[in-house]
Length: 371
Ligand SMILES: *Cc1c(COP(=O)(O)O)cnc(C)c1O
Image (cartoon, rainbow, N blue to C red):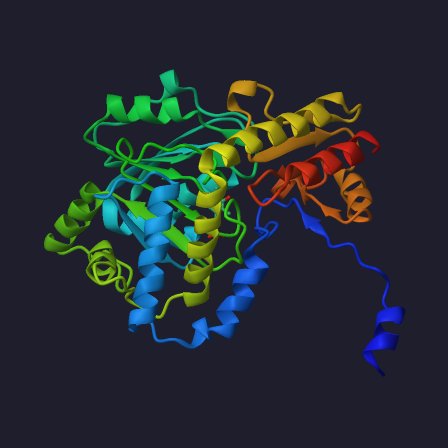
């Protein structure tokens, strides 16, 4: 068979657009960077080489610039955000953590602390809501407060001011913020909170398999003090081990070199586009999507209080089986997410990440209107 006949046999394919909340659409420059990486044989270079060190340095530098992370705050690489839940508890909590829970991801962070043998208390909000700042009461004995700024399972987002006010009220406690499905959109103040983290397959539009952990000196000090007291804080991915290797632009293990390379490049592209433009476009696209949901006869936003509605993960209740709507959009090559867990058949979830162009979102909104 020649290429000519193959071409005539295959239908003309419109590429799919993934509006799923993770993995999601790849940022539009990823394909070219991936090709370049293969041409340069990046996946084969040693993680102890100068070439890797310079990729690592470029990645950290671009991330710091894009996310306005101050020079004295550290950035480390792990396998995933799930890993970072575990590492935060191991390195920053001797006995007790406190969790704001309002969905499946924040609940899993809380469970992780329990599984690691910590006393982990929580305040839970009904799904679709957040705990109101004035209702947040943290016990004297809790060492760390865990927020999930954007609950990917429900589309409820905790206003940053709530997180900052909590830190002001409990300045001696460490504050950890899960920003997996909200960065780079959210403008987090890394001088106020102590640690935050994300995986790259959501807002950064990259293949999964890389976690990014942003950590201040107080977290490092806490990890060292636990180590000195004789506690286990893990093995290869302890904060002191990450710091020690990080100073040389290296990682303790053989990392996802291709992932770090792609993240460096995509952050560079986002810097050239401008973070303010990315944020404004996200606001615009979110308005288009919420409008489409509000106008639709069968849809209502799951998060009813607009002060808590996520701009990056938009969740709607559907009057009838959501899978029908999802299927109809799939036939138009638009892939949106189902509800999470028990909401599978009664909700839809739509990601609004920097990889989703204004045009793609407008086309999706038009299709929603026709459902
Ligand atoms: C996806 C997600 C995680 C877990 O990310 P992994 O890459 O699967 O480890 C954690 N928290 C939130 C809010 C998420 O959306």
